[in-house]
Image 1 (cartoon, rainbow, N blue to C red):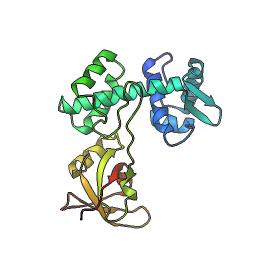
Image 2: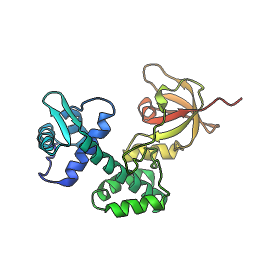
Image 3: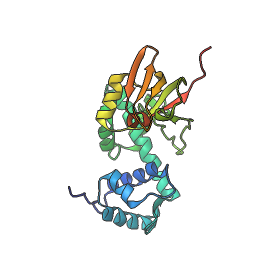
Image 4: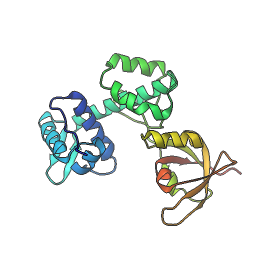
Length: 230
C-alpha cells in the first residue's frame, strides 16, 4: 500500500505532525523519520519534507540521519492539541454516551475544527478534568500535566495489589476487549501467575475474576501500586 503524502500548507497536518512528535518524544530525545512515518501512516520522504518546512516555522529541530524534536514553540502547539483532543474525548464519553473505543477518531476530527472558546466551555462543564477516559493526563492552559508514577501491568510483580490508571491504546478492537474484560480505569487487580519469555499473564480482578491476558496487552495497561491489605 502506498503511504499518503502531507498536503502543503495544511494546518491540520502540521498539528497532527507536532502532536505525534510530542508523543513519540517521551521515549527518546529525537524521533526518527521512520518512527514518525509509521505513527502517521505517511511516507518517510513526506516526513522529511514536512520536518524541513517546520524548521523554518521554528516548531521543529531536524538533523539529517538523527531525526526530529520539538522546539519550545512546537511543544506548545502539541500540548494545545493534546488538551483539545483529550477534553473532547472526555466530553464524548461523559456527556454524549460514547464508548471508549469510539472516541479517538471523533476527537481527531473535531480537535482541528472547534474554537478555543468551545474547548474551554467543555472544560468548565466537565469541572476542568485532569485525566481523560483513557487515563491520559490533560494539559492545563499553561501546558502543565499531572504526573503519576505508573508501571506497565506486564512488569507487575506477583501478588502486588495495583489499580489501573491508564490505557495507552487507541485501537478500537483492543479498547473494546479491555472493556469487555472489565479492565477499566480504577479497577484493582493482582498478577497471580506468568509464563516466562513474555508469555501470557494470569490476573485476578476485583477480587474474584481470574483472567489470562497477553503480554502485549498487559504492556499497554498502566497501573499504580497499592498498599497491601492487612
